[in-house]
Length: 218
Image (cartoon, rainbow, N blue to C red):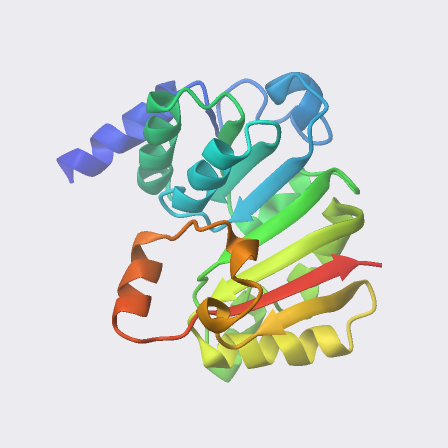
C-alpha cells in the first residue's frame, strides 16, 4: 500500500503526467501538439498502457514522434512516467483517465496512430461493452485518427483477435490492412518495432503466439 501511495504522489508531481487537478487536464483536447509537446510531430496514443512499457519503448525509438500512454491506474502510470523521465524523453506523456472518457481529451483527426497492447479480452457475453475493440470504442478511435491513421492491436487472446476481426469486417470507418495469428512468425514482425511488454515476454516464453491486427481509417 505504501508503494502505491508513493506512486500516486509521484504522478501528482510529475511534469509528464496529466491528470485531474493539474493544468492542461481540461485544456489539452485538440491541443496536444501546441500545449504539451510544443511541436507539430505526429501524436500516437497507447490505450490501457499499464506501466507504459510500450509508450516509453516507442518514444525512445522514435524521438521525432510524440507518444501518450493512457490508463486509469495512477500507480502504473507513475512507473512509466519515471522511466520516461530517467531517459529524458520529452516526446512521451501520460494521461490518467478512463478510456470511456477519451473524447474529453482527443479531438477529431488529432492522432496519427492508436495502439492497444494486450487488453483484457472480456470474454463473457455480458462484458462485450467493456471490450476495447467493440463497435462503440472503434467508432471513437476512428474519429480521433487522421485520414489514413492506424489502429493497431496486439493480443495473446485468440478470442479477442477473432472478435476484433469480425467486428472490423463490417465496420465502415476502419479497414483491415494486415493481420496475423502469429506475429513472431510473420513478415509483420517489424511492425511492433521490437518493443515487448513484461507480460508479452512471459506469454512468448510459455509458447503463446501473439496476434496482431493493423487497420486504417479510410
